[in-house]
Length: 327
Image (cartoon, rainbow, N blue to C red; front, side):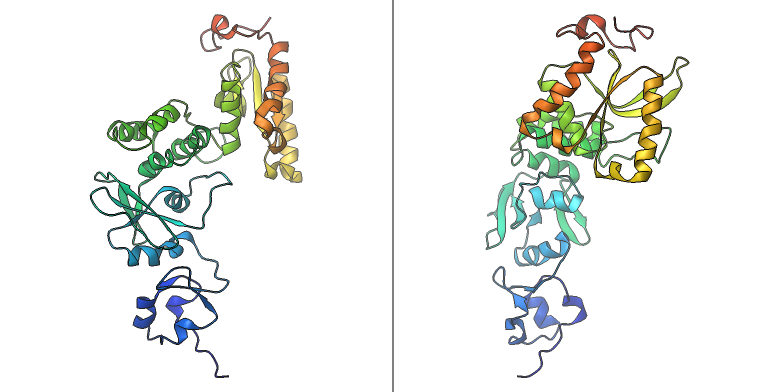
């Protein structure tokens, strides 16, 4: 059996079109070799290739002129968090409303009303902008997952430790974008989700916990909340904090299992106790089953700290009554 010719460097480990293969002087017979798969007509992928999403999308955009990457595939490219159940088997491509939607095997096609600035170029590939991608996700994701994605996009903060966090899209810019796209599909859900976005969230579980508490009717918890001593000095930061009743919440992800992080957490826990805040620690085991465990774990310290259902409106917040302490 004759030895198989190696692929040109520019085609190694990525998807490519037959047109690209012929331009690289690859023979037709070589494109039919068993080390290449054919996910769609005129597309070839080296067997076992692990490639970034941009490389996976490029042949389809090349074969479907006028199309651009959108929806969950654009979210992947932008690094937007998506729920685990989202399928990545198909590439989401769109065209303008006045043209036919992209159609071929391996592609999920859409037709969109596109305004100036809705499509940007990333590594030579047309992709919906961050704001436009979030709006289009409203047609795919349930409200809570749309809020999680939105919290990530607008997140920014400057704390007494670590580098400042720069937003992917400032909240005011996302608000203006939504206001100028009133006829787009998904706009009503996007508006509802926008009202529940909060600036400063560090992780998807923090967003989910906040939404669970809001839906359960518990007092409002601020994100990225500073804890201060009697002199007003910040002694610690917490993921979520209810200043009115001095209850804070920490979500411990996998990185909290390292010995170094556990030592830091112990020192931080001591500071929280010194300023007389009640702390609740949550992890991934608390989030399934509708979040009832989250509500139960947070409700107990709230009650101990003086909260009663409906009482938060009467007490106000510590910014209004800085010297107030729960009864």
